[in-house]
Every structure is written in C-alpha cells, then in structure tokens.
Length: 377
Image 1 (cartoon, rainbow, N blue to C red):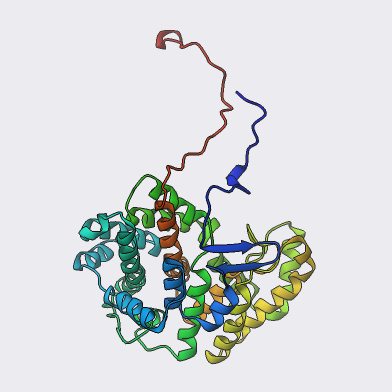
Image 2: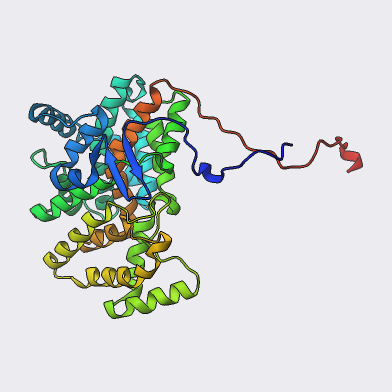
C-alpha cells in the first residue's frame, strides 16, 4: 500500500477534462456561458436563447431561434403511459416521480436509444420540453386534478407556470421564472453533471445519463438549498429576528443556509438577479416580508463575507417559489428544469472523444491474509 499518494477527497481541485461551455472564477465571483457573462444573459436573453447557446455554441439569429423554439414547442407531449406511471407513483417525492418518468421514456420512445451527437441534441431538446410537463402533471394528479395541457403560444418559462398553476402568469412572473432557468442552466462539473458524464462515458444513451443526473441532483447536499432557505425564512418569521437567528447559528458553529459555495469565495454572481426578482414579486404578491427577512439575514452575515460566506443563488430561489404558492418538494425539480440544457451539452462534450471515467481509490484495508476454513473460524 503506497503512503505517498495524495488523496483529493471529493476530487476537489482536480481537472478531469476540458470544456468549452461555462467558465467559473470562484475568487472573483464570475460566471460565463460560452464566453458571455451571466449578467448579460440574465438581463438580455431568454431561456430559449441560452439553451441554443449552450447546445450549439453561439447565440442564435432570429431565424435560428424561431426554429429552435418551434422544436421545443413541438416536443411538448408525453406518451399516455407516462400519465399512468405518474398516477401509480403519485404518492412519491416529485424527484422520484420525475426520475422514474424519464427512465420510462427511454423504454417508450424508440429514438431515445440513439447515441450519436445529433441524437443527443434531438433527445435533449425533447427532454427539455418534457421535464416540466412531468413535474406539472404530477402536481395536478397527486391533488386529484387533471393535468393542464401545454400552451404552444407561451414561452418555456411561461408555459411551465401555466401548466403548474392553470392560469396565465403575469409578464413579470414569467420573466422571473425565465431568469431563474437561465441562472441554473449550466455550472461546470457540478455533481449531477459529472455523474451524467460518468454515465455517458460507458457509452450509455442520453436518457440514462439524465436519470443519473436527476438521482444525483435529488441529494440535499446538491439540490436542496432553496428548500432549506425557505424553511429558515419561516423559522425566523419576521425581519427583526434575523440578526438574532444568525448570531445563534454562528455561536453554535452551525451553517446559515444560502451562504457559501463549493466554488465561489465572492458572492455568487447569479444571486443579484434573483434578489431583485424576489423584491418585485413580493410586492406584486402583497408579501414583501419574505424579502425583508432575507435582507435581514444578508445584513447580519456581512461580517463573515471575508471568510467566503457570501450569498448564493439558492438563497433567493426558494422565496420566489413560495410566493407562487409552489410546494417545497417541487423546488429541486424546478432546478432540474433549468439545468436540462447544461446536462445535455455536458453529455455531448463527454461523447466527443469519449473515455471511460474510472478514478482510483487508495486501499487502506488489512494486509494480505491467509484464508481460514470455516471449521477453524
């Protein structure tokens, strides 16, 4: 057993591949997709544009965007058997239902078995359209309601809110959902994207990789931060109690949810766009207190920013969902809606010059031992 091997637990700081998709500078708090700042994309683009950018490498022309949007909208359909599966699993957690439905799609749609790059793009576009349909359908079915059909006249984000709530969202609400998806669309070799790459490394199809990604995202250490923030806000209750809450947490050496990130030492660059969205949506919904509680926590956490404990994107996401009346167990599935194009392009990149991902573990068990027969044990 070697004793001079350096172990990088969690593969922290290890570069396993090159990627031309997203660039993250954790020290400066910067994020870009395909060379475009997340700030420009969040304020000037749509989710459909960002999907195209991530998958094809450049911002689309008007004609290219119209064609891509049409492909997304055409894919807004599910085999009837998927609704039966949702019905039979409706008591399960939405992430389990979503993962099960995506896995079933692999068996129900023959084209899902194709593994070339063109097939990955086609299947990726279809899954990007289908995932929000599955989530919304499950929410209705588990509450005894019929699913709301997709509206081909609506954008991806607006249609998601329409399918979920059964009513047309305001322009501001639809735009905020659009920005939310843009901000979550891609983030390098995060746990779920890496897991999807490992699956593609075995030459599996895209649906298999998406099932892997969804299973990984479901873990609370990866996708659960938005839900935890909302629980924290409810526990604090009023803005004037935020400082005492933070003080008690820090005294007990406990983490304050929504602060700190595995990559960012400065503020998560995505957070500012969600912050303003929470403020405006809170006013629109007549519930500004949630934003005020969040800002009270931010103010109380300022002394710890020098230690890298800055606000991250999920700090604001949960309150946005709460303002829409969305159940907490849908927060992680919503994350998955936005992350779909990022997973798709990560899988496509892995497929180019594919290699089986097979790291090593350093054995630290017993030295070689003599086998002892059962009668002598």
